[in-house]
Length: 136
Image 1 (cartoon, rainbow, N blue to C red):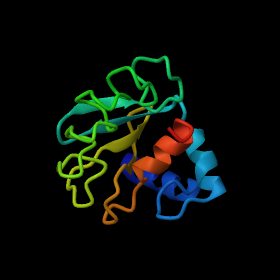
Image 2 (cartoon, rainbow, N blue to C red):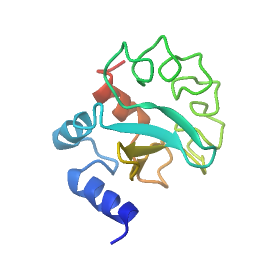
Image 3 (cartoon, rainbow, N blue to C red):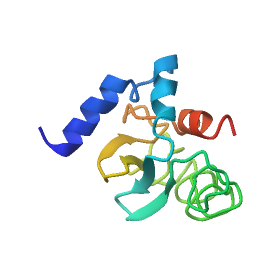
Image 4 (cartoon, rainbow, N blue to C red):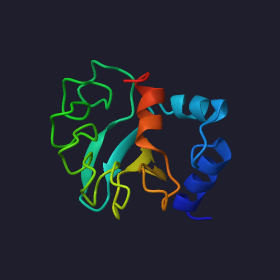
């Protein structure tokens, strides 16, 4: 089995992928805290560490730095940026995005797509941030 398929099977087994949020899914997502990162393979951009540490400059939960701010270009929280807009083809929040961000394990294996697009059957960004950043 290829590494990407292995990661997908792991994500399905852990309940990380799919439309329903369950307690086991939330628990599994919290296990990613500090052990995963976001990126966009189409643009080659690193989009932050999946970490609840609000003081880490690379954390998606740090509202004052590059990856957690709603004003920074590389933040999924920026509703006017490429990765947080409702209109960008690279955005987690565009329901028609063709190239949304991906969630990677620390070793670089793809775990899931992060998108509101139901086509991907990935992780909804609101669920990811809700679990990791504690309902930010």
